[in-house]
Amino acid sequence: MTTRTVDTTQELAAFLRTRRERLDPEDFGLPSRRQHRRTPGLRREEVAELAGVSIDYIVRLEQARGLRPSVDVVEALAGALRLAPDERAYLFNLTQQRPRNADEPATAAAPPLAGLVADLSPLPAMLMNHRYDILAWNGEMALLLLDFDTLPPSQRNAMWLCLMHPEMREFYVDRERVVREGIAHLRAAWAAHPEDQVLTDRIADFTTRDEDFARLWAERDIKVNGRGRKLLRHPDVGEIAVHFEVLVPIEDPDQRLVIYRAADDGSRAALDRLFAR
Image (cartoon, rainbow, N blue to C red; front, side):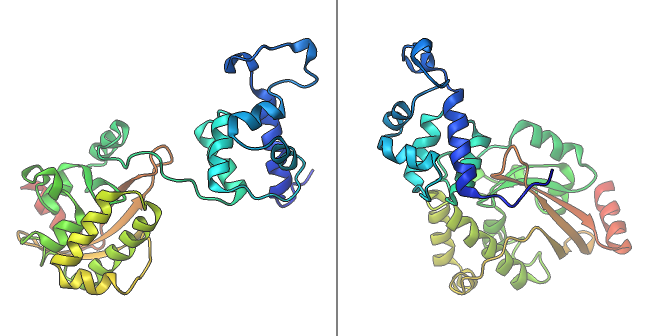
């Protein structure tokens, strides 16, 4: 048996039917009246009432008659059918809509991820959210970049440090490229989280206070950089070249695990000297 290319209209119809039929009327305060129900689960009219749409609309969706629900309707259907998070994401994918980010952005590290950051020693590692807020770090990352414990939480932000912190402004040998790539990521995050007022305010502050940021932000470059190379100018051990990798956990997609590795033998030796101090 071979699997054909997904027909999203047919799959949407089948998915809605199966999820409706799995629901127990008693969970909604409805009498089961199983002897009177020809199919298991809720009736179409009951789902329509819960979702705030017409019965005809539900019928047409379940008959694959070419409808493309709006974001509001998809949200309503997901709630009416009591979809789990993975099922909700699947429904949005089938309808080719993007869900609104209803959850608050992560402002604290998920405990398993914080533990992973520590366990990655001696590799420098840290955890950030989409704003570049630094949520967790290990000792090696603090030795390499900065002792984040000495900073107030509002300044534990990778972009803020690169732009505003006096010790970090000259830390990157190719600062222009680092700032440009960071801004390209930040613009993508800003578009993906239009409701994040903290991020919007931070971008406005950067634009006002830093000419380089304002100039590069206006270029509207978009790029989510998952790996690359940076050349660091460390005050104690000199230049260090690192490869970085950014990983996004499936369970916590708003958090990003950043891992640094020495890019060459000289940089590895410099890191060994730094961490041995």
